[in-house]
Image (cartoon, rainbow, N blue to C red):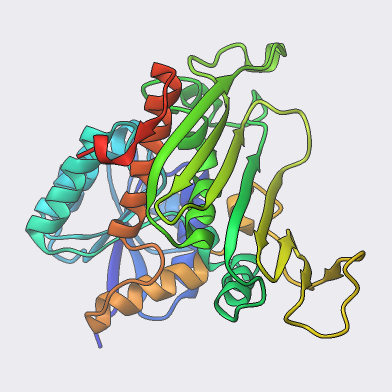
Length: 345
């Protein structure tokens, strides 16, 4: 079966993880890169250890008939136009999160993907982590019973010590605390609860620490999510914190609870309710992209393209619905009122 030829646009921090990951999956290779940097094929070979064409014009790269897929690793505000152009060129797409800063742009991307019949995957790779594979397995096996409350929170201080800070602080690029990074947590909340969202209420705040003074939006938000089945959830997104990275998970159900990697469940005889039982797994405890589970996600995406099947967990439509909740939450914070998902047509 033909090996997929992948082009990567943007050679920043996350692109390095994409290059390494694609080199480790079966059925694909990085065949081209597109960058504003004055790099040559020799430079790419020296830096990444791959043989790849180098483009400095995105239109030229997506016109390359040998390329099957484009991996979009550019700053957030460039994702929509680059996605639409690549879809119109018939290329499959891996789109780093967030897909877009605005709902209108996200809908335009969705329309382009649908009309061209290409496959698209979104960078919610945390769904493929051992921690959240375990979480979903516990839920599916009934270890927690019926969930009625969950909180999934994202604490990751993004200050001047991060290279992306230059564009991340901008409203037109970083977007919001949820779009910048908290989208991972909200996405896992929706995965855990497994029901349609009816309404969201969100509030924002901002640290007084000078490290974060450049943010044009509130780098902290808390969002209350009401689901159609009557359950509720909460996601805090805090990118102006001074602390170690923490991806907090607490699920509460009719038979037990899960706190990060700690469990109590009445479905397991003999446990002591006053003590948590620790489940040994690999926690998502770092914001470093090299520590994130890109390889199983990319392998699943490559397999779905080659086999003509639906991409599991992070296909564009599933990820679009997560973003739709985020856009509703950001509208709620901006307008100071609850927002029903039905308001976003």
